[in-house]
Image (cartoon, rainbow, N blue to C red; front, top):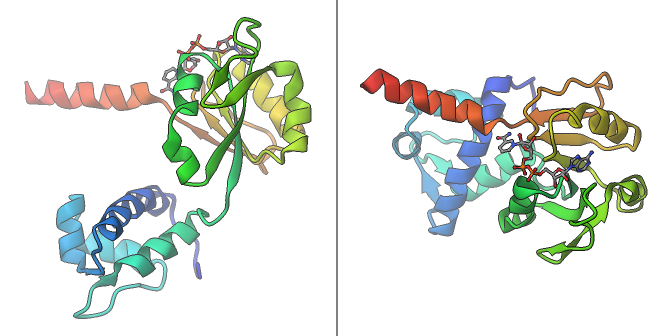
Amino acid sequence: MVEKKISTAVIKRLPKYYRYLGDLLENDVVRISSKELSQRMGVTASQIRQDLNNFGGFGQQGYGYNVEYLYNAIGKILGLENKYNTIIIGAGNLGQALANYTNFDKRGFKVKGLFDVNPRLVGITVRGIEIQDLDEMEHFIKENAIDIAVLTLPKQKAPKIANDLVHYGIKGIWNFAPVDLKLSNKDVVVENVHLLDSLMTLSYNIKERI
Ligand code: NAI
């Protein structure tokens, strides 16, 4: 379906389209014009048309977009028809909070295991998943065909763990440790998430208004 290389900027916007279209589907909306979608999403209609034209254009003149078709097509582009086995490394505040969030499972990111080095946490269960000692991780990854590792551990520990994960055959790392991980193995993709970056943007916008 994807005929040409899609720019990173467009890819970054796709989850937002997917989210809005999912809401429309839940409300039984069958079709939507780029104008209406743009009003809801707060982006220009021409941006929407341009973005969606990347995929051969799902819209029809005078009809708009078929919500379900577009939702499924974007889901496919994002690889969401795949299911991902996931583990969380570092079962402290953030690790446990993420493990408790059921929507990841619903979207196909199944949390299979939690790992920590703190013996006081090992054996505790979070949403039915037992926290295991880090020593068990290599075996667990191989036995359970784990695709994604979520890093919620101290930043000093993240590079070494990331390196180990590459050797254990992981496909992707969702990194929350406040360090931009760079891996030499280009087969493993990293997505760094820094909530503080977003908070600093908020701070800037508040400052601009004062
Ligand atoms: P926390 O101290 O509650 O949890 C960290 C856990 O990692 C602890 O349970 C600790 O035993 C474990 N740990 C330490 N070394 C480990 C290792 N080698 N292998 C496995 N587990 C190990 O900290 P919290 O609040 O959960 O934060 C976790 C990380 O996430 C920190 O690096 C923090 O800076 C970061 N963070 C990032 C955010 C973001 O937006 N990217 C937001 C909040 C926290």
